[in-house]
Structure formats: structure tokens, C-alpha cells
Length: 201
Image (cartoon, rainbow, N blue to C red):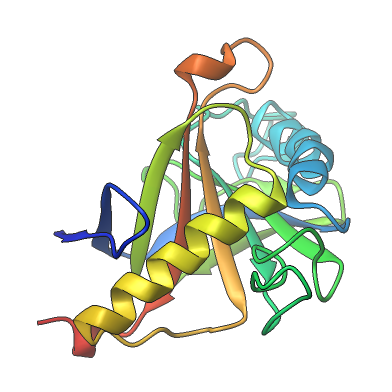
């Protein structure tokens, strides 16, 4: 992990992290706001985790799995919009209108033994190893404007440091909390972009 001081006028740091491959349960939501998409997709992914699945063990009807953090949201970002922020996680609207919501599945599971989803709109996927640049902040699930501002600050910092961005039209948002019971001031959120590991010094 590498910490970078954020470029003015932003404060705080950008963390550049390496992630090993991991499994997720994912659904795609047609919403123009990442906050709305998160609310809509959470239930589908949580349903799978809490037993709406088909275990690979014979004689077992369903399997309740441990919920892990974070909840992961991935949306597309356009180039620019009128308010001078990049669109979608970059502004107030998604350029594609689609956001992927996912939960990380515990490391005891693999593609060979993870329960199968019953809901056809939910998929199991393996996320390849990658690097993310992230900023962290507390509060409620962030608005698209907040995501836009955090993303812009990350991009300025990465440009200054000579770190290249991958998947330039994509923004990742992590939520480390139970959205039902955790008060806003105790919630932790992150906005992230994928970076090229070979460009990190």
C-alpha cells in the first residue's frame, strides 16, 4: 500500500493498494444515481448471501453465508459535464445508466464450491488481481456529486505522481457498513479508480 498526499485544493491522502483475486456476488442495476443503484442492488446480493442460493452439497436446501465488507459499486464515468465535473462518479448522472453492485464472498469459497444463485439476475464472478487508488471518508452513502469530487481529486493526484489510470470510464465505490442499522456518522465509504500497477514507483 502506498499513501499519496492529495493535490490541492483537496486534503487527506490517496491510498494505492494491491488486491489479490477474490470472488463476488454481483447484480446490475439500471439507475441514474449510484446511491439509488446501491439501495436497489443491495437486496438482491444480500438475498443470495442470506440463503437464496443452491448449495453444491447434496441434501442441503440453502446455505447462509457470512456477510463481508465492503459492499462494492461500480459505475461508468463520462468525460465531462456542464458542472465541470466528470460524469458519473463524475457528476449527477451515469453515462450508461447501469451500475454493478456486489458483495465480496468469503475466502473459504471458490468457483468450485460457492453456492449457485437462484435469482437469475445475480451472478458469481472472480475479480482478477488489480490495483486501486482510493480516498476514504465517513458519512451516508455518497451522492454522485460527492463521488465526482472525490474521483477528480484522485485523478489530479495520480497525474501529479505519474500513475496511469486503467478503465478510465469506471469508478468503484466501497461501503463498509450495514446500511440498515449503522448510523451515518459511523459509516465508512471509499471512492476508487483502477490504476496500472506497472506505473507505481
